[in-house]
Length: 310
Length: 304
Image (cartoon, rainbow over all chains, first blue to last red; front, side, top):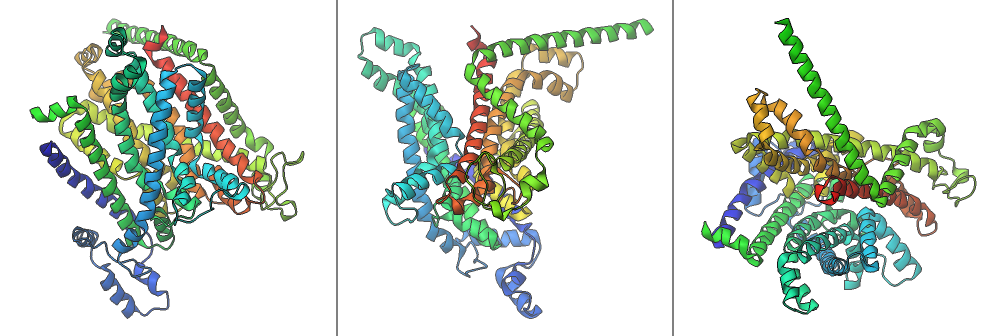
């Protein structure tokens, strides 16, 4: 196992290098000179030159990239053009809100996704199944930000049950969590249902029934454990994507997270912040994917044995 | 010599005829299966109507007068017989804007998918057919793209290159190419070892010919299914990016941009945010139903 984790961690290095090169090249296409942008048009050529030196804007593309990268490796993501604070600090301040939102969404989509997926598979073609399948279709087709707006209208404006925005209490995250989870919930229900239906028809489940196991034991002991394997991967992948996918939800509910930091920074052409936030999230989602793969190998002995033999 | 040439032509013709016949019957089988699925038929019906409306919109809607021109006297009027869905904050008819937005969304959506498929076929087929080092290089490159969450990638591309439809298309198709590359690569690898490919090779067909004429047509099923589902997702994504101000720009109508405009007034005038949202759901849900129906129709296991 340790060997597998080590090898996967090594494989992460070229991927992350590639990610940083791609993001760096895209963002370096941003038009306009950053130093002039900060100081305004009335600044003297001297002060612009001084600031360029300070921000590390001099030199060719490769030189700048190498300088930036060596900074990143030491934990220095540069300084924000706008606030002059270290980028790492800016990102880290906003990070807890994004994490709270992402995990609320993952919790909602995983718990309800697996629950409804099982229910719908066990009672295939029943009324419950049809309702769940229809709801899944609706959930996967609804634009998440629109769902958020509708919930604001209903729960915050009309019924006044939940606050419009804010991040100080747990109930502030209910509506944003549901909004961000909609598509993932639909995916999880679909995946659990399909996988459960496959397993229920498997020979060993028939054997379990034939030898007289009670239905509950068959479903939970025999079927569910195997059916959940692909779902675990899906949840892991979702988690990685979710961290980067809360941008729109953060905009709807005015949550000061990494997504809204990025949008403001993009509007202000604050390239180091956008760059730092993107690389940070890419690193995080790669690590989560790796963790999922390890977990997957851990719960599926067949995969574990593949790595042990090697 | 001339006799020989004649013979080859007739052979080729016969093969073409046979291929045509085979294709037709295959299509017929798929259609017969597809027809049984009432929900998928409903989805197809909705999409066909929307495509027709979107294509013919210029015949009954004047872009400048009905979609763009502001008329403050008429602003924020609820649904009435004159304006079926009401008017927006600038006094423009919502139904007209909604229909025009369907044009924008569908055109952008289908372009994105087309680029995604072509890119996916080029990369996926090359990787799958050649294998080895090339395969490794391409797939590692794809891994890099998959490590960046897609929304963020699209946002940074649109933000740096500027807000325009071509840049939006570029950003969204870059997000799709890795997905299609993977699907096509795995079908190519699956088909590569089969006898009819060996036969084509022995006949002296070159690599690109084998891939384009023999492998891709056989791998088309899953590609079409994925493409239909991807159009649905792309239309939602276009709306999302436009909603946060990074997609299609006002005054051009787009469902997400309309929602973004309407947001300021939604508490007093909730009808403003209803219709664009329902339009997106209807389109995305119909496309998903078609995609699911096609998947079942193409699956030989479901044919009995």
